[in-house]
Length: 502
Image (cartoon, rainbow, N blue to C red; front, top):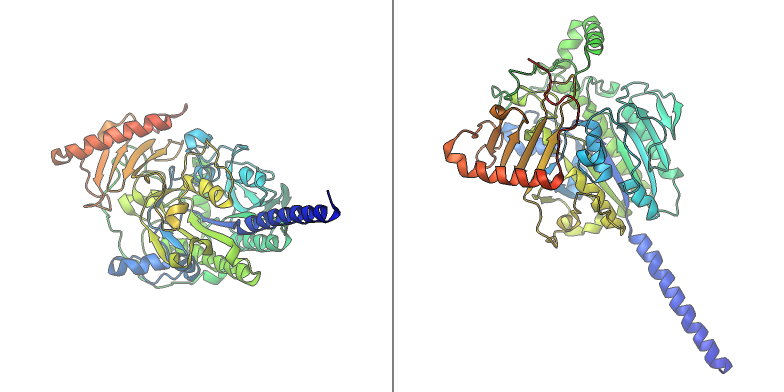
């Protein structure tokens, strides 16, 4: 080979290698960062923009959440986002595993999260992402560095609102201040300290608006004197309420064992009566919605801090921001507080996603198809260009967010599960929810079954289970329910199967 031809060959090979390197660098650059913000017990419509859209029927028309609204306005809003089990730890486990809870093993608030090799965070680590977790983890009393995360700043169990001790990569550390502010401080610090040569996943779990609620000092008086609208379906109790003992209305949302309840009651009784009345906001729902809304106001402040940091650090164009709640919440509907059971107030969550990669035409878009919390993990992996583990039961909603038709028809129904936990006042419940109807089944209690036509009765106030005119609907939903239960392997775990006795 002549020297000239050898030089030409070398130049060609160098060009090929350079092109490959450039292509790889571009592929790396197009992989988004992910910032996932999870509030606790935030009802789907407890957001300023949702209240404004309700018009005269809004209970809190004066609510303002400009930063939550901003994510929806600059991104895609999923109007029909639901959880597969409405409870703190199980929902987080479903989000990170992409699996139903009877599959991932976390069916209650007492079980640690297993270090699954194909969880969202482990899969992203394998794909070259740095991973970090901040804030509420729960998963019983699980402590230590959070599995699958390179960095974690978290607390054990429910934590407390003020001066909450945290574990930094498993090392116990005291803090000062309102917990959701403190968690945000650590998250912002991590944005500067993270590995700069890798895309990142950051999950932030806020404590708000979990009870018993303590707003930040700056929001102690926010919305004082504002009128709270009536509960829309007041007077329609859950069918199990007459048999199961009622949850303590002052326990926030998670009813505690008797000793803890007595301690909380003693502490509450010692508070000035005027302060108690003020916290209730005149709504008659335990602590009342004002304390609930004030804690979420503090979260909105922190969402604003996070968005500003992304702007200031020139990360906004490269980062997908997800805002969601771990589950819905009852504010008096069906005579209920808490969550767990299968009405939409418990199942539905706010879910907003901002990423410029969806295209400018998708700013402010609204998606009506039903998505689930188990869909987030496969969607993130899809966008990261990483394999989606076969064990994940969720589906990527990337096509929906981009305004395209998915390759396979999208779901028209989903299965819901909740397993009784002693000493709480909600029985084991399964449900099948479609776009237009819902069947709720209480194992061992066929007399409690419920059937709702969600098109005619979106607030689930008229049980049609014994209505002969709804026979065709009932039979169709039973068939779908049985098929999904069998396909998913849904089962009642060993333990308290029947719930508390009357």
